[in-house]
Length: 341
Image 1 (tube, rainbow, N blue to C red):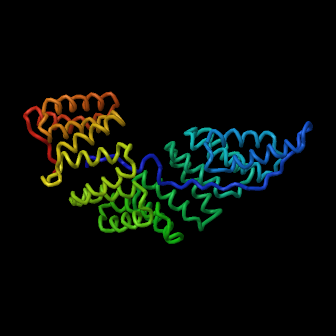
Image 2: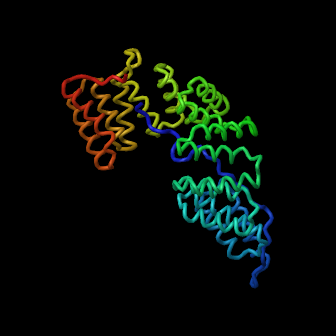
Image 3: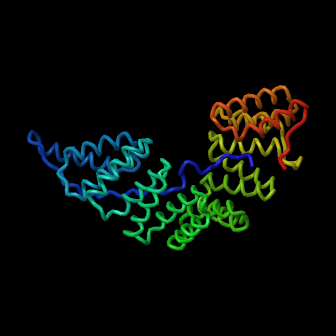
């Protein structure tokens, strides 16, 4: 199937943001009132999840350096800064701050959960699973941690164990949309399409603006050979994320290669594929663009794009894709389009 994973990396994990609002502030010698007000402002910024992560890092750092804290309030400041570092993609700094928060307040299940999420983004799955286990020991009723641990098992292709965690997450919190979305993906991976369809549809009903749920259901319809329905779901994902190459590429591939003539459209496929390439010049996107040109009857351009796809695959070390690209290249050289079977 010619679509990218709409769920990577780790967008379907839940980072839990909690902060102790009561911080003991110290008066500096030269101006006690101003110092108290200054620390109060930094405290508010540090715990404000809507503030820019750079602003939060600065505020939390000031608070950590100058505040007069108990262990728990200092742990909360480190934890908040860890979340800000994670949002900036500074995973090592995030893990360091989460670890300090845990050292200061070892009974904080939230810090274990968030450190586990960061370990997971780095592919340190054993450490992530260990932290999730400790988080659940401290708070066995937290649905988000079951959901997050399920995503690790899903990345490890242990779909049955992932399903068990999503089931428990939904039992604890039936309104947890991400757990329904993720369970859809796990059922789909196991070929349990009817169950997957129920979960994806439920996720969409719960949060119609979540583009990944539309994308996941589109992939499911594609696998079920319901191509018109797949196109509708991809279009919904594009409306929500018009600058995201994933749904653009998926719909372009469908319009270029679908077995059903009524679904194919070489002109639209070309337009979508060109946009995807502009957003990300990858081998997969070039391969899709080649298929779109072929469907539109522009075979010299299809040949050129497929050759570029092969070159990009070799440059990235993904030799496993080259064989399929070569087969399509030969079709285009003979003036024939590619059809998905």
